[in-house]
Image 1: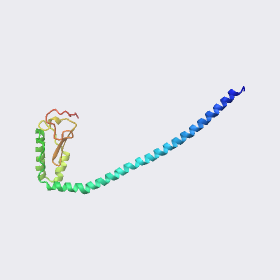
Image 2: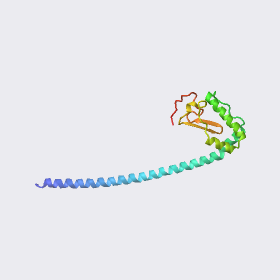
Image 3: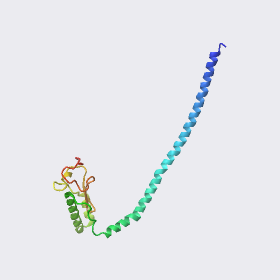
Image 4: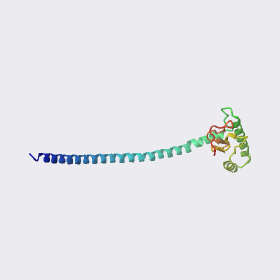
Length: 169
């Protein structure tokens, strides 16, 4: 009887060892299961972008085969551009005048030379034309298809000298 504390301590140590082994086995099984599930999930997620790219390629092919030829036919059939929907601001009217000048120039110059000049020679803002755009980093000023794009925020330019979106270069 005098050894009962020692025996109790020995039994508790054995019990603790058994519990530790069981916990270790349980954790190993859980980690293995989680690892397998993560591997399956990652594999599935990696397949999704491939499917999306295939769908995009298919849609691009359809648009080139169907939509673009039809829109080109429609554009060839139009002799006059669509009438303006809104009343033009003074700056927009100036842009329209530049576009008409560009269209008149297109009739006298070979198309390739004209396109080259418009691409590399943007319209520069002056005190008369687009004064709010002078020194603005948002200014674009290139002509596309006879239409000037003053900037991405205000495609026809701002209607006064103080543009709220002006940012210095």
